[in-house]
Length: 170
Image (cartoon, rainbow, N blue to C red; front, side):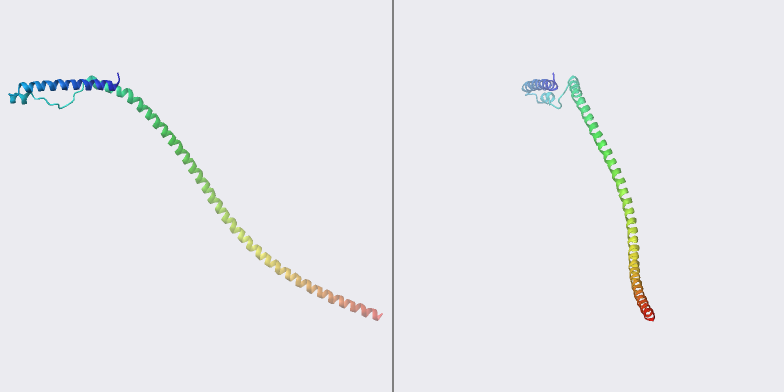
């Protein structure tokens, strides 16, 4: 017998009691019509619906049979959901830690890059100075080579004159 069947029986019994009580009240009312004082004393009113202890126990048993397994299933589902959330949280924390270390590495790489750029600028400046010095030296060497060439021409001209003079003196 299910919970609903037992409740239906309870309701049917209660309705039967109510109809019997109403019939008794009507019978008394017709008999005491001439006795108003007796009528007010005997008058019955429905104040509460009564339920027996056995009906309450049956309802509690039914609830415990259906509700307890349902609650255990709900608790199991909640525990599973909590475990999924915990796992996701731990994965997110690991990801954040990895990103922190990557960010720290990027900062270190940037600092190294800035130092290297500074060194490169210094080397470029030194190279520009060396190139300017090289150009100056090349122009100086070219000027010296021209002077040397002029001196060699002048010498060869003097030598030729000396040879010509020596040949004519001979």
